[in-house]
Image (tube, rainbow, N blue to C red; front, side, top):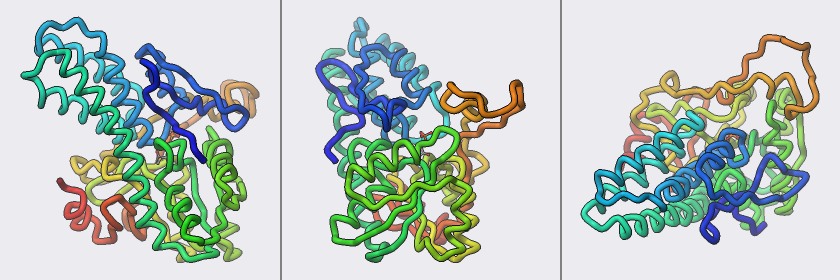
Length: 347
Ligand code: MRU
């Protein structure tokens, strides 16, 4: 399927409004930083690598009209934009990685004119996008080696085209396997409460000609027990130095179930998702979201008693010990993770 989740187009950020899918493929043209912040917050743009791209493009959007006369003034403007975007969502490492990459590019060129620094930041943001396209394809290349033809694959949330620029991490592996002639069958967990699996994963897999079946999250155990799942693959929002992995809430359940049923459980993620400054999953910030996402179906229809107490963490952490392998663009990382992540991911 030839679509781009997010890109720079004619002076603004063009992104797919993912809250409209699967009903409508509608684009949003963002010219204002506040609109971008809100789009990130309400998941119009979402998925860790796409958030990295949104952060990079957002920095350019935020500073392109800066009237700074020297680098000190420009840096103040830049820091204001970065701080603002960093306050949108806390868990995906890629968002912060995108912001840091842009700051690094500015500082590296601090001796140039402000006009030139702006040009270079634009170039950097576009490089983030092109890198993601290449990196996801590398992840697909390595990951597809792990899949046999006719495997039944279970996935959760959306780690596909819509979570990246145009290919995906976990779903990128599936796209690559298909390209290699493997005939996979995919089961997609609906992914309560915001239904990224039902709305987004089934949509893009179907468009791409992949055999996909939707299940409710609580059906996964039964499918495994029936021998209908050969492998599980998910994306990641942040991976600690020891391999503990934050991903969409419900991923941990699948990892525990996979362990019990002796089914390989894979994580697919770019190196920009790793956070080596965090020792273990305990240090990963977990986003808590509005309870209305749980008590109402898409903020429209109530499905719980009025005024009920709600707990709504958007992510959970899967212990490294439950992960068979982590597929990255630099190759497949296997346990012991502490040593192997350091070896493969450290610059
Ligand atoms: O809340 P979301 O939809 O941004 O959560 C996204 C996920 O959990 C994805 O699985 C993760 O970002 C990996 S995307 C390649």
